[in-house]
Image (cartoon, helix red, strand yellow):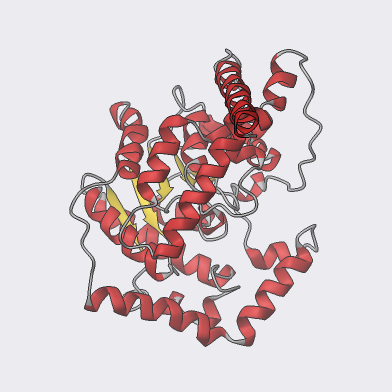
Length: 352
């Protein structure tokens, strides 16, 4: 019986090793799979930007906290720049930096790039979705494991990061995530995924949650539930962010050594800086405690860059109010306009 179990184990290990080796070789094939793995809505924003890039000198990149919070028309009216919002829901690192690297900006007029400074995406049951499969590799997996040990995160949060990225890495390199690479590379299969969102090119990529709700689009019910949930107990959520800020001010946890994730960010943006592009970072309002602690430390590590930090509920009290809110995380149209005006004026102050 022991010999039988041993034999099964050895054969299983050989099969797994073969799958991993074969998958690694397939992922190295000379074919750009980004557009077939990333969300069609995100790809559409990238492609539309490439059509208008000669008229744009400033872009904003990040998650829905950029997409829903930065109004280029307001920003341009104050700064005199010509900007475009390229944020999208869920576009957190590593995917946000993959997106940045895929933008064809070498021969454009881009002079400023504003990037949302955010922690790594926390993976849940969606760990094996196509955008994450494309984004992960051995180097990023190593960075994610290092990130999961940050002392500002609770043991439970550290475990979630470790398990999420371990399952993603195993899923991709065990061969389970390789089918689309083969279909695109060998069989030239077309991409039939539906793009459910328009790109809002006439508002320079920006769409407020209020306008999205009014449009009665595909996400109408979800937006309505989120809005009603927040406004039913708004002070509970707002006090959560205020208390996180107060906790940090009373007892900041200082992480001495710059982490691998921050070094990864610096390496990505370094090529932009060398081309004369000015890189700015934005810390969005309404950060939960662990993320706020991490981002405040990351802000110190990125001392060579301007970081616009809107996470302080005391300094920016007016955007930590119910009247400026759409849901627990996002600002409404009025709040987004106010945040954009603050950012624009700070930009002018720092560039005169």
